[in-house]
Amino acid sequence: MSIAVRLTEVRGRIAAAARSAGRDPSSVRLVAVSKTFPTRAIAEAYAAGQRDFGENRVQEALQKISASTDLEIRWHLLGHLQTNKARKAGPAFAVIQSVDSVELIEKLEAAAAEAGRSPELLIQVDLAGEATKHGAPPAEVPRLFQAAAACRAARVVGLMTLPPVPDTPEDSRRWFRQLRGLRDGWLSSGVPAAMLRELSMGMSGDFEVAVQEGATMVRVGTAIFGSRNG
Ligand SMILES: *Cc1c(COP(=O)(O)O)cnc(C)c1O
Image 1: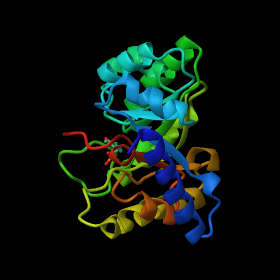
Image 2 (image 1 turned 30 degrees about the vertical axis):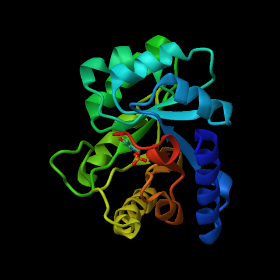
Image 3 (image 1 turned 45 degrees about the horizontal axis):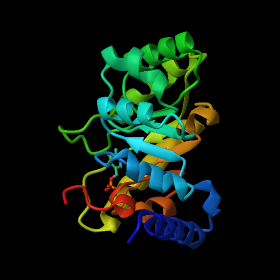
Image 4 (image 1 turned 90 degrees about the horizontal axis):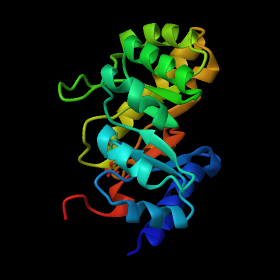
């Protein structure tokens, strides 16, 4: 199956999941996760109308970004960003979904101001406390909102989470619900709604459940581009 056909299929599944939850399908943005795939695959998805692309590794992303400057792509950084790389890498992305410390927000804000950019930042929330994963524990997130309130160039616009790998899509539901519940709690405790507009959750194995639970962005790789190991 071609990338274009698989994209159409994924878009259809997102729309059906949205309707099943009484949501407007256009309220869910599809981020095509192109990590490990060549720029040729990105161009193919672009030709099929895809505009948001996500990458995990900074080096790989920067190479693909400079190889596709002729395309009007919104690049999302999904993987961990070291604070010492924020200045160089930060301004290359329209959206950075992996923000997990006050220091990183401050570095990204300084880099954005210097570069005359206004990237969107998502706070990555670590729900399961897995040692191998990044993200801020929920108890630390209010400090990140405080740091975000001082930003003038970069804008925190929501939350992202990467739950434990599920055996079945339903396994992820509790984590998606938990992120939405945290969002609702922070909203009622006075965090500005503009900082909590987006919920980035759901991947190839569980994006329909994520849409049912309120995702505004789903990050889908293998269901669009095929398997990464073969
Ligand atoms: C790789 C990756 C995805 C996409 O995973 P698939 O299972 O291929 O859809 C989504 N989010 C993050 C943070 C990733 O690293």
